[in-house]
Amino acid sequence: MFVENKFDPFLNNYLTKNLELISSQFELAGKTFVYFPAIQFTDGSDQKSILDFIRYQIPVLYLLSDKELEQLVNSSRTHITPSVFYRMLIDELQLPFEKACLLFKDAEKKFSATPIDYKSETDLDTFFDSFVKDLTSKEFDNVLGTAPLSRDYDADRLFDEETNQFSEEVKDKLAALKKANKYEVLVETIMLMLSTLKEERPDLIEKIQPLLTKERLLEPKVAPSPLVIDKHNNIFLPDFGNKEIKLHALPKTVYLLFLRHPEGIRFKELYQYKAELLEIYYKVTNRYEKQEIERAINDLVDMTNPSINQKCTRIREAFRNIMDDHIARYYYIDGKNGEAKRIMLPQELIEFK
Image (cartoon, one colour):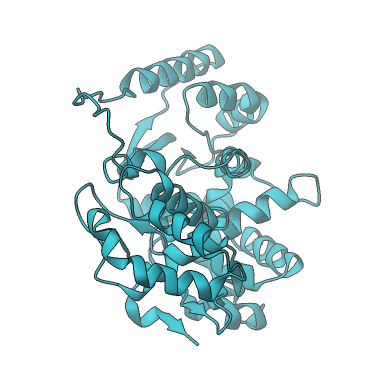
């Protein structure tokens, strides 16, 4: 992200003129370049994708209609000019900003600033070329040797790998959201402006502010919504626009089992819950083919069968389809190899009606 403590007309003119080229350089390095003055919210073709991205990051905003959310975004942009936003960053991060900088956030969300030194446009060309090359050279995979895989399938060992293998539809959605991540700045400004928008739009703020907290400008926090399971075994998130989590019978059966057992269940002990799985399955499905149903449940509790991981994938995918993983992780089934798998959501937020 470009940040300056005093407006530099030459530098801003350069960035405006070369924004597309600079952005593409960063994109090739797997990063996003954010130039705050260029982030616009219009009625153009990008409007829906921007709203989708903002809601994905702050699912509480599913409570607002498209029109209401657009008004909230525009109000935030009206109140926060680039100079105001830069000043907030400089004051909050307490980094030495003697001149314009590129603010970089690493994988651990730690910030560092690189001053932009230049005397001419050629110097700026060189600066951005070198910065991106240096950035690319620092990004490497820490590849560790792995033990040879056993010939026998082990659902527990392969859990992490397989439960992140989403469908093409969800992969496409996540890829589109990743491309829109420059709008993360809008998410941060919305969070920041909520308290100052009380007088302007009290109706909107009353809907959402009780569900949000903010520790720092670049660390917005969203409280998890309660999870409600109605008498028909439908699953809803009331604080996130009452979104329904739609699952087919077998993934829903697995999910309801783990909701019943907040202490968690080791996969190798899943066979001990076979009777309970059958009981739940008969409640969530209209099928009565006893032999076929028992075969499906037997596959679930068999650690040499991929069925349990496939169902956990569908559960994780259902939540990742509507919210970012930093919130979704409270809801899906997770756990380390050999340890009990469980749902992180606090028990007091789970309600069976």
